[in-house]
Amino acid sequence: MSENKVRWKSPSNIALVKYWGKKGFQLPANASISFTLSECFTDTTLSWVETGSFDVEVELHGEKSEAFKPKVEKFFNNITERYPILSRFTFSLQTSNTFPHSSGIASSASGMSALALCVCSFLDQNELLKQEFYREASYLARIGSGSACRSVYGLLAEWGEHPDYTNSTDEAAIPHVDVHPVFNTYQDTILLVHEGQKSVSSTAGHALLNNHPFEDQRYQVAGSNMTRIKKILATGDLDEFCELIEYEALMLHSLMMTSNPSYMLVEPNTLAIIQKIREYRKQNNCHIAFTLDAGANVHMLYPERDIDKAKALIDTELKQYCSNGRYICDKVGQGPEKLKC
Ligand code: DP6
Image (cartoon, rainbow, N blue to C red; front, side, top):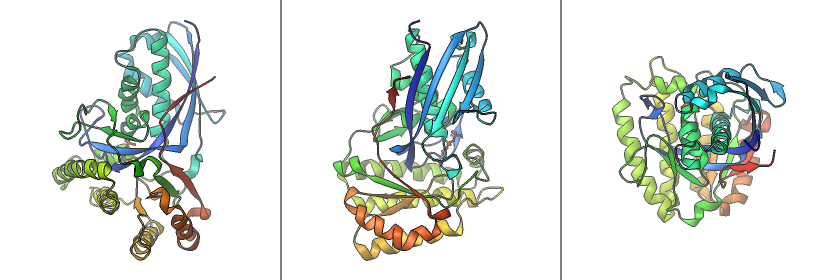
């Protein structure tokens, strides 16, 4: 083996049509599609020594992390059947996120994709990869966290079998390429409404969709929204785009509110921001729209040509609803990058 260390940075992503609900082991109940981000990413270095048995040490932002370690151990356990070689090595993981730990931005997509890419580099050096590099990285990332499988590709990634998406599969994401140029520079400003841990994890949220009274309807709507968004992404119809992504975000949160037990991750300031965005869009002839992930923060999505308007909207109306006035300016990105150790 030539090297015993590898380093990858991998971005977060924001879903346009949401993955919500699972079947089998880490397989999605419906297809989803997301923008890959650029500024919010995880930087992970993985090193290894052959010791004859498995162990892993985890450092987050330069300090031993007992909180993150069980997730990493579970990930390795879950992929060892596919790659038994992993059981003979002691790994050490050093990882850091560009976005603040307390920001309420989920780090699982960037964190698990960065880890999966590192593991793939390790396997590649040993000539053991079962599939093409990025496809396998996406496959392994999915096992760590579903949405992570989409972070492996730049710009837009689709995950989950759907008749309109050629070669789509539940096992891994695929890059989505039939895209109007307006989306190449799309902006995502993340308005931080709630900093800190959310009250119900996404994993628990997915489980609450089983036997939910709207479960079947959700999967039907998600499927038809995937058909609609494919056309929107190809034609660049931004009126339709705004309507669709907002509908998806609100549907996701309405499913949480109507789960048993019911729960709510949006906060009064989330709703205030949403209303301001809608009012502003109506009055200012622009395409500033919102989406939400499983939390209170608002992702404000807009084309590059609306940057000045978005800035004005944030400064005059939205900042007051953000925790400590904080927001993160991000945009679509080119996907993960292998770095020098
Ligand atoms: C609302 O990927 O975090 O962000 O597979 O249990 O790790 P696990 O869940 P996770 O769920 C993400 C849910 C979502 C929608 C999305 O990203 O598609």
